[in-house]
Image (cartoon, rainbow, N blue to C red; front, side):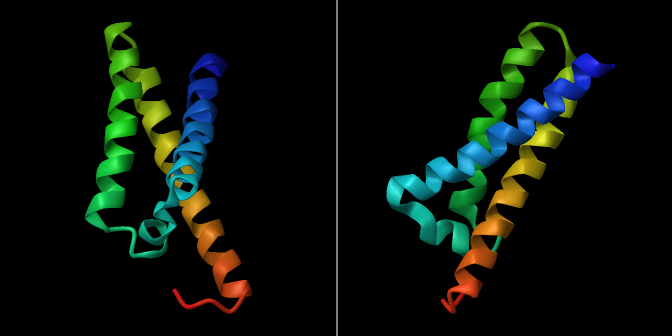
Length: 93
């Protein structure tokens, strides 16, 4: 069970890293828009799909599910933190 939780933690870290990469690539405005923004969603889904496919090839659907949950949680936390920092600086959403 601890092995699967590691997959969730790794997924969360990768989700945060994906959001950081989007911001670093000069596309931070995408992150500031609503979470339903199509481009942002597509970027996350593509990154997540590549990672989950790796687990699937290994035959570990439970690990893939936990990784995906962690990835989306990490991405959500990173976007929320980014928006909070902007609000703290008095920048509009």
